Image (tube, rainbow, N blue to C red):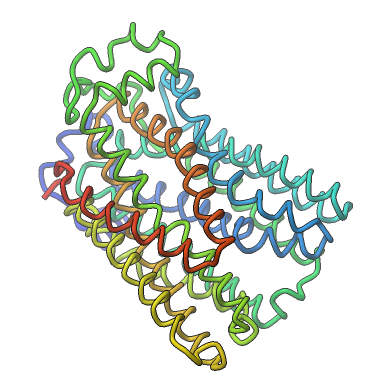
Length: 451
């Protein structure tokens, strides 16, 4: 047995018979492909830690003297910018026989953008630096949209059902280790006292990681034609992926898909309700800072908590996603909603604001739990959309769902931000309510996982 296969057998619990669903040309390459996908995803996830829109970039803005108002644009540009273009890009991506090259292109775009941010941080300050970094972040997000669509498609072409979630889990574990290391370093070096120059070198390191990710991904053995009929995915018909349909405008095609494909439309609706775990962490950090607890814990501790959640959640939720991705989404959203309710109730107790130690423990603990279950929700939805479709339809599903979520994310983020002006507790209550509704929707989704 080759070394790569031995490592694969040690890391991944294989599902007998599922590899036969793949083209014969890639069946023997499954172990090698899996390790390459894990490595590339781990490198990309590690690079993400160096340019995180909710932590590192706001610190960089503060160090550069960028007006605080611009910091509020970081997360919307980062998240929505990577989702909105995907449906428009799908017709172009479908013409590429080997989708791995789309990922490679996206990774190199991200590397270039992060390197540009590092250069801007080194030579500019104030408003100009903030605007230029936002532009670079928008380009970065475009590169991420290329990688996002293509990575799920390549995984579906090269890895059988029952093993895809584990691969995502292992990559998440690796990124968790990086986050812990980064958080401890920031804590030791002074957290918010880091200079713009130090943060610029951190960005340079991130750019290098994306170059490595592109190099690893380029070696994946991918078939030119998956050979599976487009009608094999749940809730679709032969006409859904007919070549003539691809010539239709991408917007019209997206609307038609959402209108006619009921299972896919239900998935989008449920996914939009599961934003509780992705949008609530910044509000928890805001509570910590406003209550004075942040002075005791520091931003580095929150980054460590995020890293530990990835480290624990990777192996914990990877196999769970392969067994039942819809159940994983439901469980994650329910725990996140419950945690937010606890924060709201305990935070309203009289006298608690004077006990910074208790407040700090509560909020750091809540942040850890929410980010931990968000790891599960994220794995669950990624595995679900890959498992529910085959062939080019998988690319359409991923692209249209992400583009729709870009719009929904902006709307939901706007509502929660508006409620936060009345008090952070109102925003948390709104997100918790969405999460509870999302749980009810997730458990009613059709099962698509390989049991």
